[in-house]
Image 1 (cartoon, rainbow, N blue to C red):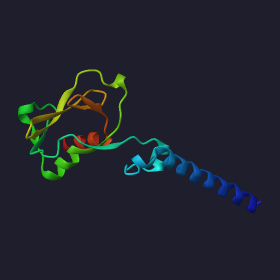
Image 2 (image 1 turned 135 degrees about the vertical axis):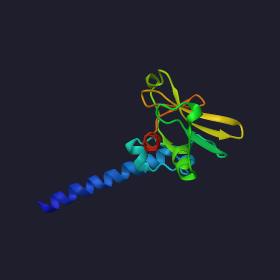
Image 3 (image 1 turned 30 degrees about the vertical axis):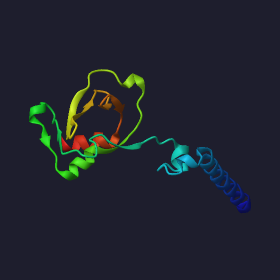
Image 4 (image 1 turned 60 degrees about the horizontal axis):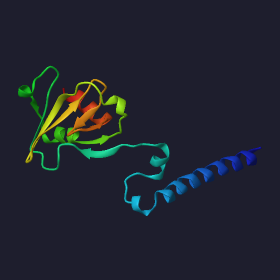
Amino acid sequence: MKMNLFVKISALLIAFAGVVLLMKWLQGPSSSSSSRSGLEFLLGTDAKPFNWCGSQAQNVHIFGKGLSETDALPLNSRDQSRICEVLIEPVAAEEVTGEFLGVAQAQTAEGPVVLEQNEAGVFRVKGLPFRSKVLTKALSELQ
């Protein structure tokens, strides 16, 4: 009985390792530099790092609850990196509806970059919609 259980568990582990290796092989060498592992690919995590402020952001302000753009709250460098450098996830086309309101603004050399959010929790920067659990949490803590 114990030997039979050991054989079954070993077969499952070998099969799982084979599937992970097959997924890595199917991704090819061009994506080997990607930060995504075979296990992440297998489990379907689509979060990717994104810096919406730009590399040369000078000032970042958040618009607190009920505050207008003129009453924006400035952020220190630690909070600025929490807000600017986030993991983004894809969104469905149906979620990119409704009115987007400004929640933060970064001042760059090219001009201001505004982060907007709709009531469904979808963010938008320069027309690019995305979802981010990290950004949602950071904004709720700072507001």
